[in-house]
Length: 87
Image (cartoon, rainbow, N blue to C red):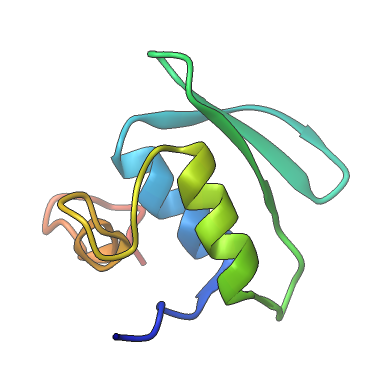
């Protein structure tokens, strides 16, 4: 089985935003994201730290997504040529 990608909190938030989630509030370093269909999760954003594989799987489980399914994180992380915020 392949390994889960190593992502920072900001990268994960960017990927989830592209799949329809939006940040509804922030408390400290924890960003609360919600989708219009009711799915919700919390993503910690600590500078210089990556999200561990266990927490990544839990966040994706909350979002009803998978690392290796049809809506995968690597696909969501691809940069759009017209997206000025993609770095």
